[in-house]
Image (cartoon, rainbow, N blue to C red; front, side, top):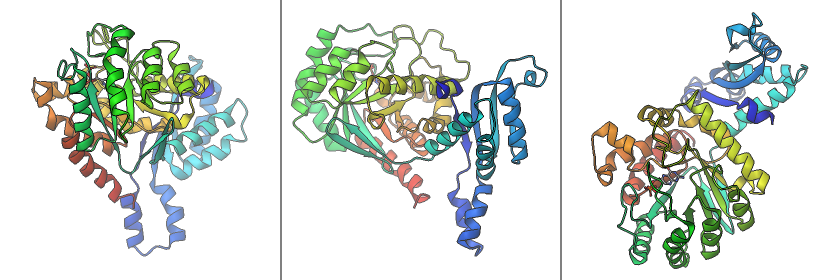
Length: 406
Ligand code: HH2
């Protein structure tokens, strides 16, 4: 699979609307602007596992186009057989590179198509998420996903909504606060949590799903178990939120495909019991991207249509403080995957580490900052415990994003 191997990723891109605005103010013609703007947009695209011969030709062609390519030093001295590549140049230089590569041997036309596809995916800002018979428009307005934990031990609200009546009331309250979707879970995945048997998980979530499914708000089931996913969808859920990103039960992808539900593919390193013991990455964003790509491919191979998928970097799932902060700062790179980004930073430990606020339920303002930063980077679904408060934060961030898009 070429695109998994290459793991092409847009690392950065110029924010163009202010440039366009100033160009127009000069009185330049639209025709002139259309030509000039491709020079004003600076792009950096990372590729992995490029063979020595491909890398040398990429460098040569990108230099000829007026850009450049960073490669391993050993590529020239023939000490390495493959290398990572960082292509840098303007939009125009990338277009030139892509047409030059179309004429080259050594699979370079495929690399060109992958770069082109990646740039196209990165630019996408609106999606229609399909989940069974439901649809949810994502972008320009991000969706708020309210969390309902039907558990005795969730990290921030364990025990509060274990009673089905309390969980149903919580779900209704979150809908009244403006939730676009509810994510219902019967197993805590906090660091160190003990797994819950599917029978117990089902006993917790099914009555809550049945009761809330009568309303208009779509429901998601937060589970690692294929059986729970199937029964939850039969009871009225339309989205499966699998925190293992399809690396847990092998049946999960088929279960989602057969039910027609949507799927959240979330990144995790390790499993909840051990994930925080010593998380380490070669290249954090590249590793997350590759994991999510694998999940997308596994879902598609099982028959889940692409427009049923969301991706999520999995804040706190096998990440140190620095990792969580870097993900938030570089989240936009995941737009490369061409699927809407969900973010679940709500009340999490890293917010407590930065703010010194120990009680998870008191991490409201920190959560609001994280949500706003995520929206600024392109997140289109925010999984939160405090819908009313985050609705304000997200509305402000989304309005700032939108002001440059219209
Ligand atoms: N975080 C949690 C659970 N599920 N799903 C997605 N897609 N993204 C997340 O970041 C995410 C998630 C953990 O939060 P919570 O459900 O409140 O806690 P617990 O696992 O302890 O029940």
